[in-house]
Length: 388
Image 1: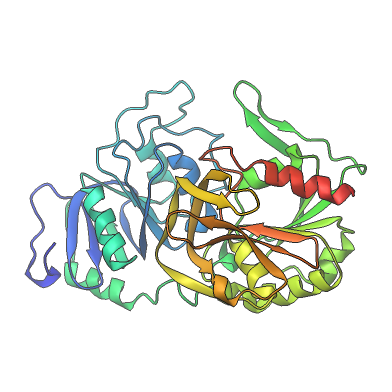
Image 2: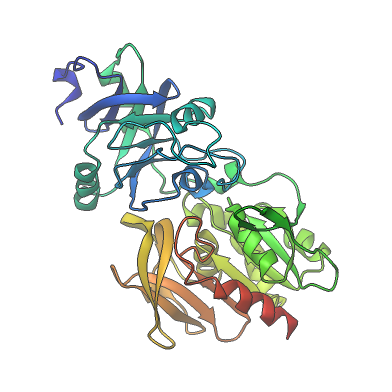
């Protein structure tokens, strides 16, 4: 990488990644034409790129995929975690090939173009990953122009001027705007997403959508719940109007402390009312904030489908799916918040349980999609606990 002021665009380059310090990486652009500014992160998953691109937790971020072959099975109408992609773009090693899967509806590069997302191919993604691990997640601009015309200095200035995710509330931008009854169950090959029973006899879970992945709601239905989804800005009164048996706090993007300005007071009221609570990812961080803990911005974050987490109750290790750049600071947890899980990669907190309330949360994604299925039991634990 070299300084943008001294760079010339190499012949054949139609895409570029420009850093705030003026350095740049060139490649072949695909997907939408244009530019986007955000935080560069990496994901180590080898499958599930469509689910990853549509995960609302990636709002404000550009994904560097470590697995070299991305896009080779095309896209379909089922493997989505939200109505549209939320990641700003992606970087891949190999050029996107023709789809080779019977479920394909349209090629990945065409899907990216239609969704307004920018891709960059032909890049040493492992080198980018090593850079992020050493220096932290940088602010960058990704750009695509079929003619290879880039104002590199202007792009570097744009990257430098972006404030970064710390202090940024993005849940407000990706949350659903209206309440809705969720009925879909989990997906099965040949059957699609079966409708779950929504009868009144089922425990009623009110899920707060801070940028939720759809598979979370599907697993709550599979576990036996009737699920009503409310926006991130739902008040305590609006939640209680639904007569919930339990409250679910979803994943989402951005800085939990910023989202906590309006979310934490509501969660505190729910705790005082002794409403059972289950939180995932951002929901885990918000529960931590609600009981008095602090959250911190991580050096590089955890993103992938192969993260080992130790369950402290019995020492069992779960292989989990993760996507987060902030974490609960274990040292700030109050006496009534017991750590339950810990990352075996860096020792960061991955779960808490309150000793004086029916409330628990995990930092990782037990719904997977993509990822392993070691942690699905948490949905069953939550829903079964509502029947007691």
